[in-house]
Amino acid sequence: MIESLRQLDTKLQSGAATAHELWNEAPVCSPKSEIRLAEKVANHLIETLSQRGVVANREVVVQRGRTDIHVDAIKKEPNGEVYDRITFIIEAKGCWHPRLKKAMKAQLVARYLAENRCDYGLYLVGWFLCNRWAPEYRKRQTPKWNLEKARLFFQDQAEQCSKEGKLIKAFVLNLAL
Image (cartoon, rainbow, N blue to C red; front, side):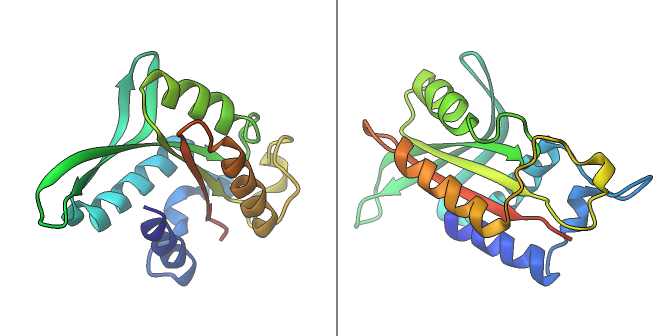
């Protein structure tokens, strides 16, 4: 999944895929919703991973809510026989979200993974910060970080959350124009 997300990140910044799809441009330049971000990522995962036995679904109903992206992968024996299913839950946040720094632990780990007996989670942050985003519409909660600092912060946080059999990864997707 991380490899596929890196491919998407590269495509978005090289022009092979367009970050503009996730931006409103009228009346001012501002990011589209987290829902659109999750849709774009889920569609990319489906395109790039379905031939490998990976299924990505959006807004899957779980015990007390909906996950942004629910991914199931089939694990095979060396002889090709299927012997396990691995489930990943992806929680997507825009960089403006007021609980951006806390939702990995509080929402992804303590809620979605715990309530669904799932051991694998990915915290996906859409990093929209750039000069094209109309300053008057930026949220006050948006961290005053650069992309690299955001990536380091969430990678460290994911390592801290990876305990008691849980494996958490973080990915900050560069959506700057």
